Amino acid sequence: MKKILIIGGSKGIGNAILQQQLENNTVITISRNAPEITHPSLTHYSLDVLQDTLPEIESLDTLIYCPGSITLKPIGSLSIDDFRNDFEINVIGAVKVIQKYLPVLKKGNQPSILLFSTVAAKLGMPFHASIATAKAGVEGLVKSLGAELASSIRINAIAPTITDTSLAAGILRNDRMKENMIERHPMKGYLQPEEVANMADFLISEKAKSISGQIFEMDYGIVSFKI
Image 1: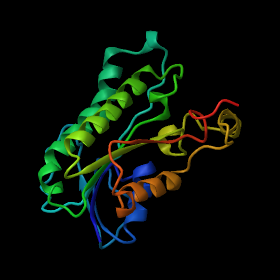
Image 2: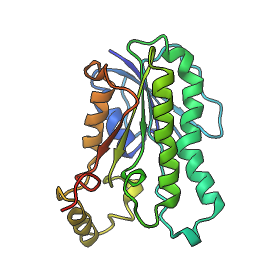
Image 3: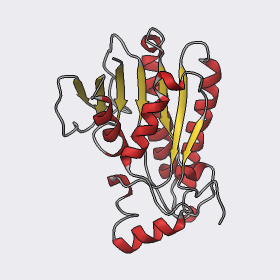
């Protein structure tokens, strides 16, 4: 049994990971809103990781940072605050929690860190300048910390394509847009949160003990293939 900290476990991908990991592990969540689930192995802290003081945690094996954003605007409509906010949510928040819990993670059982990028960091997409820039920062963090912590803690990231969560509700807001999104992907589909949770489960497990500093595209072929 592992002790897992999930930042942003109240909804979306984070919540799918939370529900899966509660089957066999002790889970702590930190998010502004509490998950709509109660479980004897779940502890929740309601706070904003960017603004509030993070709680003290005595032991920890895995840290998963899930908060993200989808800011889609043409470059002329993006403000400096848009770029700043995306960077704060995706990079600074991750750095803050990693710095806070690094000492206790180093004492954990086969400790690991999991972050999240996006396919837009690899594939140039119109209107993604702000979020792609922020997620490129996440990928740089994974590479750098993978080397720095190689002897003690593994760190990887998942880079999903569009995933059917509340964060993407505007993009998948009707059947026509969903069908268009399916057709855009060579493998004719897009992600469900449970698919991403399955990849997360593998990456934080002993089965992935040789893997660190890697970015895993879950893309339904949109980055990998041209058909």
